[in-house]
Image 1 (cartoon, rainbow, N blue to C red):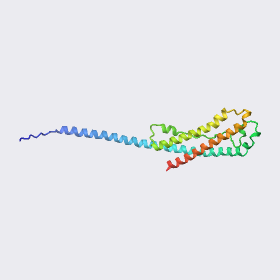
Image 2: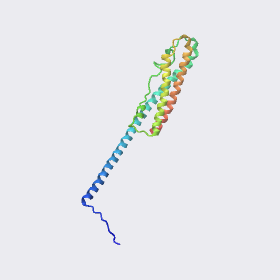
Image 3: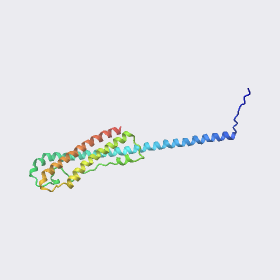
Image 4: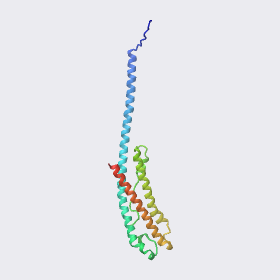
Length: 200
């Protein structure tokens, strides 16, 4: 049998083209890969900076809440010791008659910049971090509702001048104040836990 062998003849020029094509492909692939590494590095750095900003905000909020809770607890304790025992002698509801109040119910405000950072598409938090931040924000919403129930809804909209509701108004005030202290306590505990967790 006569076997014919086929030989592929590749010219030097074709070899150069193949080598150039492989080098171009490799350099494009390398460029994409390096770009991806750079984007991941920038994303990780952005997430780290955002988390540091959130931790700073949480620490400031914790400090504010500790002062606010102490202030509110003082108002509640003084009210229980004096005012609530003498409700029948009062002629009107007046915030200035409430022992311990120094100007306003809420003297400092906590912030929630983390809501903006968590919704920013460029900041890539892992799932656990994202869930924790959302839980803190939800708890902060409960706290804000308790503050608003007392300082806005009650003090601005309740029938505070009605002489038939003096006792009811003071009891309602202290009830709302207790709920606010409860929310502050919960928020303080959550913040202490997550600050410790994320500071490690």
